[in-house]
Length: 288
Ligand SMILES: *[C@@H]1O[C@H](CO)[C@@H](O)[C@H](O)[C@H]1NC(C)=O
Ligand SMILES: *[C@@H]1O[C@H](CO)[C@@H](O)[C@H](O)[C@H]1NC(C)=O
Ligand SMILES: *[C@@H]1O[C@H](CO)[C@@H](O)[C@H](O)[C@H]1NC(C)=O
Ligand SMILES: *[C@@H]1O[C@H](CO)[C@@H](O)[C@H](O)[C@H]1NC(C)=O
Ligand SMILES: *[C@@H]1O[C@H](CO)[C@@H](O)[C@H](O)[C@H]1NC(C)=O
Ligand SMILES: *[C@@H]1O[C@H](CO)[C@@H](O)[C@H](O)[C@H]1NC(C)=O
Ligand SMILES: *[C@@H]1O[C@H](CO)[C@@H](O)[C@H](O)[C@H]1NC(C)=O
Ligand SMILES: *[C@@H]1O[C@H](CO)[C@@H](O)[C@H](O)[C@H]1NC(C)=O
Ligand SMILES: *[C@@H]1O[C@H](CO)[C@@H](O)[C@H](O)[C@H]1NC(C)=O
Ligand SMILES: *[C@@H]1O[C@H](CO)[C@@H](O)[C@H](O)[C@H]1NC(C)=O
Ligand SMILES: *[C@@H]1O[C@H](CO)[C@@H](O)[C@H](O)[C@H]1NC(C)=O
Ligand SMILES: *[C@@H]1O[C@H](CO)[C@@H](O)[C@H](O)[C@H]1NC(C)=O
Image 1 (tube, rainbow, N blue to C red):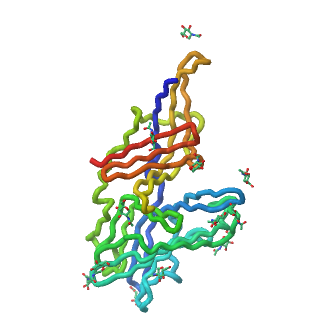
Image 2 (spheres, protein in one colour):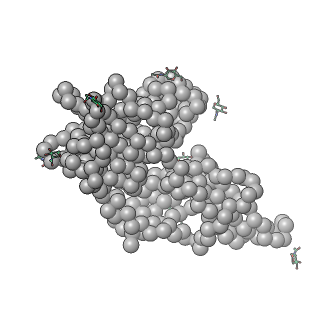
Image 3 (cartoon, rainbow, N blue to C red):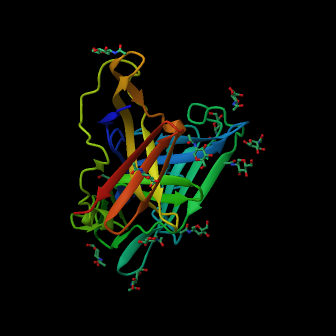
């Protein structure tokens, strides 16, 4: 059987909303963030575990009771709340020359069945990471357009299109920026696949638009080194012996049944997606 894979890419790194959040005291702004965030949360159902993909909606709002400029000696907090009892918190600390994110806190409410269908718990879960490595020079804006993923005790938080400043000297983001490492080296070549891939416009036939999945490749130290947010549809043509002709078939990759593996080297990374024993797709990314 001759297989010719034609891969259509849907909305890579797309469809995530940007949110603006501000913490104020009186008339002055002390923390401002413009960002897109998405969360990957694993939870238990009665007979298995599931992973929910949640994006920070643009209805997310700063929680004025828990957010603080830290002027009373407490730490400085930006807490954004969304939905029934979900929140994302960033606490900041500083010295004379730099400020940094001290803690990243994610709280989610498993009672929210629209996000966590069939969860067998109704707990409100809080997870904290205190090693996120987001820092910038005082009086500059931290900028990271590239997606950066942080593990927060088993869950992952991905930020992209991020501009953020704490301990602000004025009411708007400073014009000078501290750029994150990923933006300095974001010269990733277009993906190449083992087979000759051609991009086609998706055929308007079943099985419909493929579901988007979020696929990670992690280093030994559990930090994500590759992130792909995409829906995949395969247009497979093969010679059918029973029909004595070449037939074409569209197949969607189902993220719920797909395992991502791979590895990251200094100048290349591979992502291998496997859906059961039927489909294996290898992607090789190289730095040029
Ligand atoms: C905030 O600004 C308004 C008008 O611009 C002013 O009347 C008020 O006193 C200010 N409040 C503080 C705490 O500075
Ligand atoms: C899921 O259940 C396992 C035990 O089966 C437990 O160890 C784990 O903490 C649970 N996970 C969550 C997110 O509740
Ligand atoms: C939820 O399901 C997991 C297994 O998936 C089980 O270990 C755990 O005890 C269950 N928790 C509750 C509260 O039923
Ligand atoms: C798990 O439970 C759900 C709902 O109770 C059921 O629909 C599903 O078939 C079960 N799956 C397995 C593998 O038992
Ligand atoms: C969690 O969600 C449930 C159902 O939506 C809601 O009744 C409850 O108040 C929420 N908990 C918190 C702490 O907001
Ligand atoms: C401020 O903190 C950074 C990072 O922890 C450190 O590299 C720097 O030396 C510190 N500066 C001062 C003046 O303490
Ligand atoms: C960060 O979290 C740790 C552990 O949860 C806590 O001890 C610490 O006080 C927190 N730091 C800040 C600045 O909130
Ligand atoms: C930051 O800006 C403020 C106001 O412009 C200034 O007072 C302060 O000295 C600056 N700090 C640093 C570390 O440049
Ligand atoms: C994780 O390992 C990679 C290389 O494998 C390294 O670049 C990165 O700094 C490490 N991260 C942490 C938090 O140790
Ligand atoms: C398959 O089709 C070709 C041409 O369409 C024909 O020549 C050939 O005999 C067919 N083979 C079988 C086994 O039907
Ligand atoms: C994913 O990998 C796990 C562990 O290797 C395996 O148990 C599971 O069946 C795999 N799932 C799929 C859809 O291949
Ligand atoms: C795809 O990648 C997997 C794991 O990295 C490897 O075992 C497999 O041989 C690769 N397949 C092809 C066709 O390159």
